[in-house]
Image 1 (cartoon, helix red, strand yellow):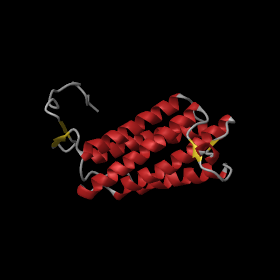
Image 2 (tube, helix red, strand yellow; image 1 turned 60 degrees about the vertical axis):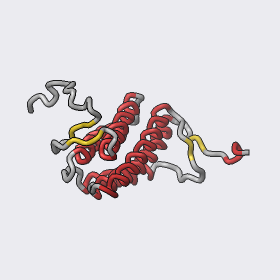
Image 3 (cartoon, rainbow, N blue to C red; image 1 turned 90 degrees about the vertical axis):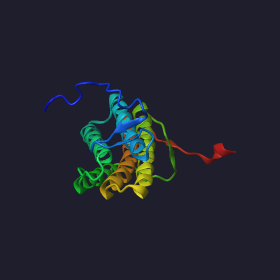
Length: 183
């Protein structure tokens, strides 16, 4: 594979537009570019989370998810391009089931917190939900793949379970929401 980024700045975006993977140009604040940005931001938050240390059982899946998110960005960047497949959603669901079996049932809502890595995981979960909302909005005007929408929905569920797993492995309790604080 040759050099993909032989020149970092091109000046072609100085007019407020950017190029998509299919060669078309769109405004930098278009829904499509915002959706790509949210997927990229999610990937970055996962990178931070990984640097804070995660249980071994999560490391390989998180790296795969980062690759998936890069592929998702490619799908968004190239209208009509499909790379994510159903097996990626199946893998997320299997991991959710595996991790959730080892967690105690929730009787209360939990707040973001516990370990630093779990807090970053909660941040990733919220960015994932935003990315999903943006992709849904984009889909109303420009079709995206059903798999990409399902992937983000399932990923946010997985991230929630990962937050709890990170805290459990670290021996730190989840931060339970307490309605008494509302008084």
